Image (cartoon, rainbow, N blue to C red; front, side, top):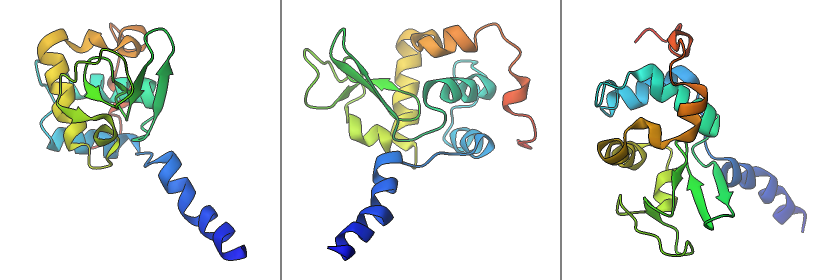
Length: 147
């Protein structure tokens, strides 16, 4: 019993919390994946978006009781429109991914899906970006990152 309890303390936090990225690390990763200036959207806008959507947590989830959808991952991509979680009613899976794939720490599928969202709806598809980032001075989001 003590062994099982100890294993729970060792492994559970990694599974439940995911990787919480440092701001500049996130900026570097998404820049390397081609998100910087995608559709003329600055890297600072993406960093601001992730800060307010998930606090840079790759496994963040937020349930939306209105349409019974869930937002997944560091960019909080919605299961009603963009991914398949196997439980959201009338979901369309516009990115062609399982929602759990949008919680991967490598961010490849998240960035690919974010590009598809921007292609179709622009960055204003994210409410947190509209409320916290749009029209604001975002220079602090890349300060000290040496990008």
